[in-house]
Image (tube, rainbow, N blue to C red; front, side, top):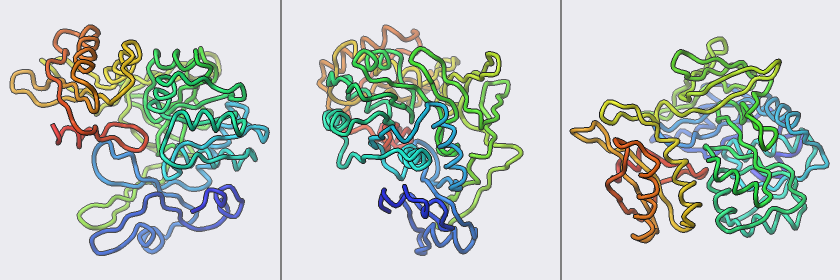
Length: 375
């Protein structure tokens, strides 16, 4: 579907179903068929999850939920029709689709960046169209910093989501003039749950959300912008898994929440699924992955790709492996040494593995199950 249509009232008011990255089962049944015939839903959009782990499933969001999220984000950042978005994310992911929803609500013009991602092209187009707003993932920010590309004066806010951005990467981007703001959210929440309003501030929870954590710090989300459920493709058939309005969504994310007067703030700690055990000690892979970006910036290792992955070990339960792609042996060893200087003794990486490419989704997230299988 054309981007222009998604910015028109008829798209948002139409009682139809929109599918991002549709697929079919073995018997040829499509998600559109399943949604219209079996679920009998209207005015809903489906987004395939990033696929970093687990089954193939699509998140079902109503258009009302997407617009409610868009209004909250616009209010948080003061977005109006005087702003101009440069769209550099795919619209079949909620991050890119959310840009269109915010632009529709505010009346902001949108310029779409076509073709394969290129940091230099993005920076040039920002200047050419006078872009004031953009939404990026950390890998895209890394590319801008690695190429030493300065932001145009017009740029007001760059929302960064889809993964954690290290403080070193954040500071390097700010130094180049990119007004990056950390965000936290997920497909199930129609985009953002919390956002950093100022460069030195914490991520403030948007007022549309009711958040709570359990004793382990695992987050549960409730609110009107929450997804209705999941369309799951399993054993050659479609199946619907509803999300309870009362119970909300128990995420797999560990966060800390605190209040300052009427304001609520969130700090992302890590994912439950990103916790492994080494010699009886719990190790979070997320923060280690963030350190890789920091060390690469420090050592000027701007080429190639790298990730740390856990593999099973008879003695230690698990051990960490540094996986690199399109990186010289010398640079990989430098990265390993720099990384080990930041790790606890039982975490240290002793093995480097080289692959043709590290499996990642379109938003830059490592596909851990695929990577483990390759190792």
